[in-house]
Length: 330
Image (cartoon, rainbow, N blue to C red; front, top):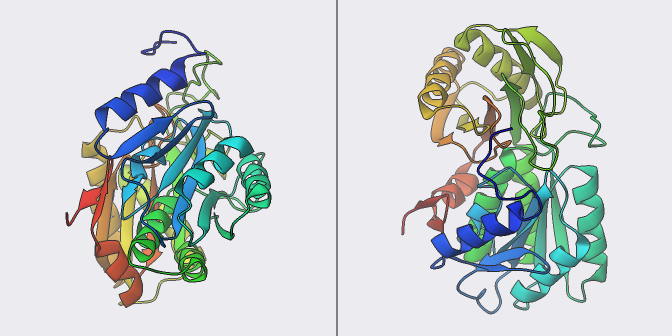
């Protein structure tokens, strides 16, 4: 194993310290328990958005804390759920009187711990559960579909509504709508190595790929031989389209996400291949996002997310955002 690391025990804390120091104009990092908040306190009367999950998926979620998105994020150890005390501490820190909305990816540990934190909270709170991965219905980590890259889209769009005065119930309803309007699927060419484990999560041949892989390296639909980029892209989109069923001339967001080890050159190639297929189906790409946003350490691979858009979602996608990982309009 080759990693920039001093010790596995200090890996997360040192990374958080570096993140906080590099972006001190945007975030504050808190320790024991670990959580990240905006450098500027949540304004009075604003719904506070909190997300989190195991570390290793950066910049999700800490890199999405800031104006127009999250108020706080809770990082667990690598690929391990954050604990209820982290979530409760974060919620108490950012709650400004309008309630707290938890945005939770559908993984058993995340769901259980966020539910416990919600039950311990004194003030009003709601949750949005993301489950956009169309690859499999159940996995070793979940009951039902996994929550993956569309979580970024949920956080951006709901973050805008919260920033502009939306109520707790309005923010939850919009989050559920974005999740319902989204579908994702990924593919991996290599495994990744959790620092504490010291060895790859799974073995995969040089001429193989895991089609429908999860963001922790969970098995997908099948292990397959390598194919051309266009063939892979077509298969991913066919699976998403079959589930999401976008109509001809319907507007969509096309989000090509890297898993951590894939160059941007290849991600843009995937985008071009996806655009070719969507153009043939007369599906209108109105908004785009390309880059590493929901990663899996150093895994070589990528995912595609489609989100069906309407005027409401377009407005909140386009609104100003300023975080460590995503910023425009300000």
